[in-house]
Image 1 (cartoon, one colour):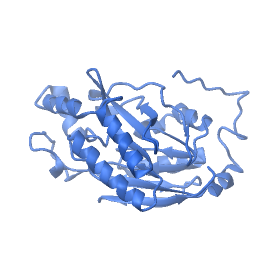
Image 2 (cartoon, one colour):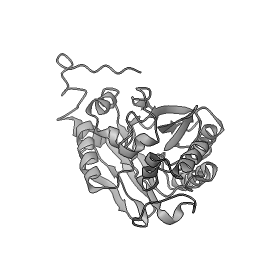
Image 3 (spheres, one colour):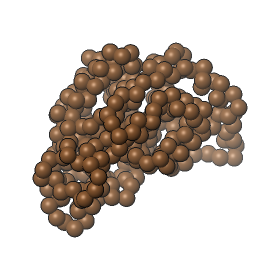
Image 4 (cartoon, one colour):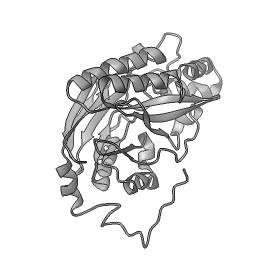
Length: 295
């Protein structure tokens, strides 16, 4: 990183299970954030067209009417490349921003949990699929690969990310550290306090800025024909946050409501934090440890 960067961490609802409408909501929010000076705008895990909540996914194991919801999710997932991916590139180009979003991605008959990062010129700069779906997610998503398990050079700094609980995988994190990550994206659906223990540690371990948007969804936002188990109105209560390389909050956490968090990332904080500890630099022992990533 060379200059101070303003980032936006977005916590808003998608238009549940409607891909095109969700992308247009993303476009409107991205423009709003750009107007506020954000150079990087980050949306939550599986934002397009919705995170598959356990409140309906659990019914898939029994082969009930939730099968039709899975089919709907597949139809409303995007393809890469494809017109919806192209539209996201247009959003980034029109707003003049780096745009990162989670998406359900369809390839043949399988859905994957993807993190997509678009450059201001509209190109897809980073494409990563979640390595391991967690718990009920295994009824929905296929397994990702090592592709995209790196940080990419941008005019903001080196940007990379992992999705939700793959952030708990030490080797996956270190793959980002070795690639020089400076702005670490951690989109998630984990709306627990425990998640914040993790991202505070990751910020301190990576000595990078961490941007972690969390999904916010209400039961009342779901279509009437989607079966939901009994529970509270909030399926996901958020908890989005932006952290500095010392593990301190720069913005958030934001709970129980929609909103956009903003923070200015000062590269001086990176160098100050890495003076004593740099996980892939002077504090690393490549003569003792070596990581090989199969991409």
